[in-house]
Length: 176
Image (tube, rainbow, N blue to C red; front, side, top):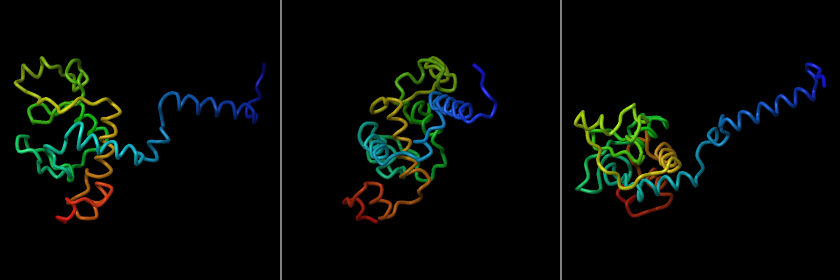
């Protein structure tokens, strides 16, 4: 069977084949181009405030004012300049020696975190606190999406930002 170069049918087949290859290869993602959905941002907020309990160290608004006096001080995420990939890495691998736990249960079982294993951390005298819970990859991604949408680089909290953060008027917003 012969194809004529530049024929409409051939061009259409090549375009559809190319599109299928891009989709099957995982990129570019049309969802990523649109940004995270509201549902994913809400899921990320629940992970932040409940499952991972990030607010214990980072504060409910991510300003570094811890909510649990037994927890270490967390970074002020509102002034952070980390991008999505950097946030995902830090959430998964933690910051050994700096009180940020690794939420990937396999983080130092192999070389996925900067080529280091738990044995390497032990040799260097670095420790990681235990996380409140471990997170699956999709949960880490939703947490990062929430942080980027509502916390990271958002500056100081205001009443308007507080209502947006929670999605409704809540008592804590009365302090602004």
